[in-house]
Length: 99
Image (cartoon, rainbow, N blue to C red; front, side, top):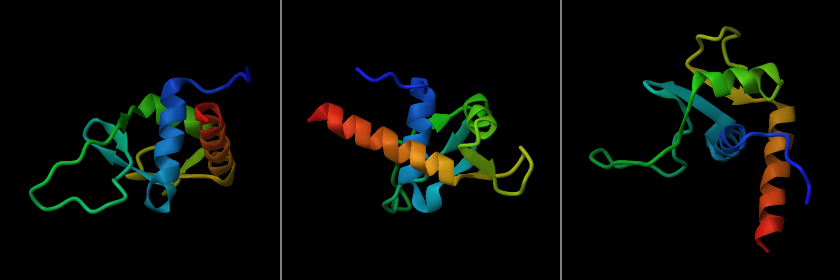
């Protein structure tokens, strides 16, 4: 069984950012979240995971994402090329494991 260097939180954040529009996480009241790919109606609700600042800082330290305005107070973060590759590897590994 192959080992995975990522914690469950890091893995979830990578996969959420990879599936989000523009591969971007947006800052919200509880941390960072990936907006849903489909539109949310004006009165509707959406269940989205929220990732802590600690998780985002670890991803940034590992070079997997970058703060959009260059500071850690940026309202958005985007996956780097290395982060996109890691997310693709994770999604292919999870698809292979579920078969």
